[in-house]
Image 1: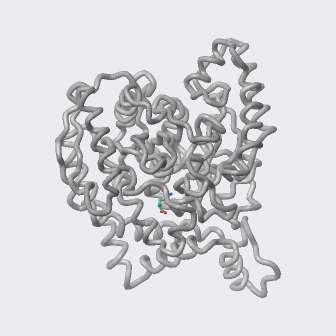
Image 2 (image 1 turned 90 degrees about the vertical axis):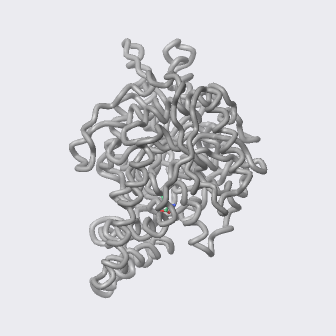
Length: 483
Ligand code: GLN
């Protein structure tokens, strides 16, 4: 039963082949058995899950239906869940029980989804390996000595290991797409403003966006449907109608114009990944797509710009964790200043402290113009590159990451080496565009992802292309040994 996708679960529940309660018990038992190897969950919510599953079964018995009614999921541990620990992967919030549900959590619960738990993540979503978590690294089910990617590494590891069919994630610079690529999943970062950020603990507010991680594009469509939509409580949420994503999956790709940026195939890209990306292009050609070489000339400036803007916003967002209002407080503070300093010094891990310092520096008087303002200008140039490209093509295709997963600890002493892994993903966040990663093959037994980018609010186009690709390839069906 643990092999079922969301779409198959919806059919099984509708056909009364099993109940949500039965399925939930099977998955909870599987998590108890296998998660000790993976460390993909920070908290399990067994009681809530069984209660939600029973309620979903009762709703179905009363004639209700819906693709998410009774479907088991999990939330990245930065979505606030009422009365349940919401740690953000940090000692700072280890004792924090959110007093309310994030909009995404509330919407999915209303649609009947069953929450099995809260997944592991890099501390405050800062990272690409899930190694900055206060709760320890999550492991990649394809090889337990390798990272699953980050920062939504727990969601990715759990779904890839078939502990559950789908989970939420968030993506500030790649944290849905990159772990999806590294664990053979499909992951979608929506357009900025498509999914409410209310109750999603902020890292870099102008970049953060929640989205689905699942095995198939079909399942991402189902989960996104439950997450997307205008929310008056988020001032950056956009009041655009939400299309029926599942209904759009079967559109023909005849004549679809795919742009492949020449800058993507630079020296930093593993040549074996380049080959797999070109193989996926050939596959899409067979389905009727036409390929065009394009250029994104400012791409080389994306990493430096992102690693100024994201820490700058983080330094401001994380100032609320002061040891006074909520979260961790140091023992026996001598005075107020000691309270602030030690609570933050003891509560935040090294990567978070590094980013707060970089961000505060970039925003400080005298440096603001040289760093933050400059980075914002680069951000606009990157957006302009995309706008020009989308005048010529419908989709942009390339690798999700320059390398496959790396060994646990391999990049721990070199934060910049990890930052460079974000080269293909962060431009979509800087421009606010939607992006999807889907399985495209393997290198040394480790999964490789192909990334698709589309114009604003064209999530449906991404899902359509990915679904058609998945109807004609079987990379996404491969299962890690032992799971
Ligand atoms: N790896 C990037 C960072 O560390 C992206 C993280 C994310 O998307 N949350 O900032």
